[in-house]
Length: 83
Image (cartoon, rainbow, N blue to C red; front, side):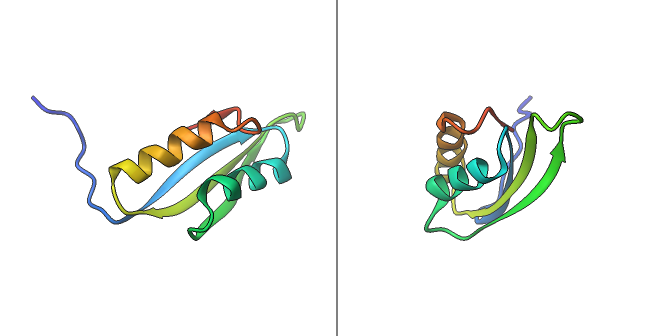
């Protein structure tokens, strides 16, 4: 039984990223996804303000582009976690 979800491209994809500084997170997203258009929404901030999470919405054309964004966001020094 194949449980893999089929994704129809192009589509909008949402990455949740977590880091410690809002401006650094925005800069990180810009450096990875630019020049493509994207939208950032604040998702959550920890009770002590140590961590912040953002939802990043971007249109992706294919599976490779989606995976590349995920990998490159995860490698960025300002981003602690990508979901």
